[in-house]
Image (cartoon, rainbow, N blue to C red):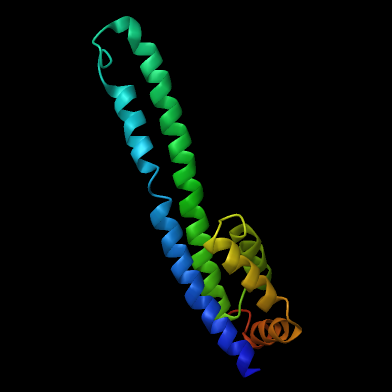
Length: 145
């Protein structure tokens, strides 16, 4: 039982660390968003010829949309990872933690390692019972902080 608690506490810490790292490195495509925005907004295009304006705006829109989608996906995954760490700490939302562990497996290399180890720990019967025992002792009306 103490080994399970130790592993869960380590998982909480690693979820916070990997979530933070994911948020930071998924912010790098903000450069592409900025470049796309500049290409869409520059009046007359970089050459000043109005006939060349449409290709620059289209290219800028593509940069903006793809960069924005990558940033949005990365920040969402980071927030889900941190929230899963919080849920593991509170022994709450067992299925959510399993789903986030599977999603983290897509985030190589740190997320993959975290996802695999989280699945290994959470799929133990003793850990599953710990989550079930903690959720059954909490009153239904009690606020979840």
